[in-house]
Picture (tube, rainbow, N blue to C red):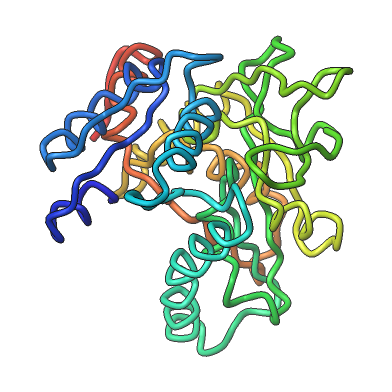
Length: 279
């Protein structure tokens, strides 16, 4: 989206992206380049999202007189969290109208399920429902089964630490150094979590759980087969949780899942893991 906006307004645009993510998000990379933006590969650390954010911030600090920084998630210093959360809130502004049109009111037992990496889409999905009885369920990336690596700090009892200028629950070692993560979804492969979600967890306003890589892939297959959508691997984690919950619920209970990404960007990963790609 940033490359599209830059193209629209005739601005130069640099996108910092982990070298590993450049390979696994090839369709996104091609689209960004078509919009005239420059991809800056980040080869430090795990070469994923966390390192890309770090490198972007380093560049911005060195060039703040001539460059603006855009953060596509509710992470980083306070003002960037607010900017992102305010813009993504459009999701729930539209949703609350749709819910009232569909049900005549906001259902008493409404569950809003969203994947959570940095936490931007979940913050936007839940925003207008904060003063309702809607239940918020955030689904983190549990990583591969039979692996100790994941990207689920809230679900796995991570401690408070500092990452990208903000205090948050973050995956770290005994010395407080940021720990390694692993997820099939590049967008969820982040060791921390927005301070907004840390607050929602501590205030018990939202519940958080996780789905494994394998569960996300199975959910992708089922949703792509039965529904007229093809979710990316990020919301596939949320669909995995909905699939677990649905059989246990009463007919009066309503689940809404935010399908916050299209599978096209994960096409290469899906083909490699499943041997086919359902569009």
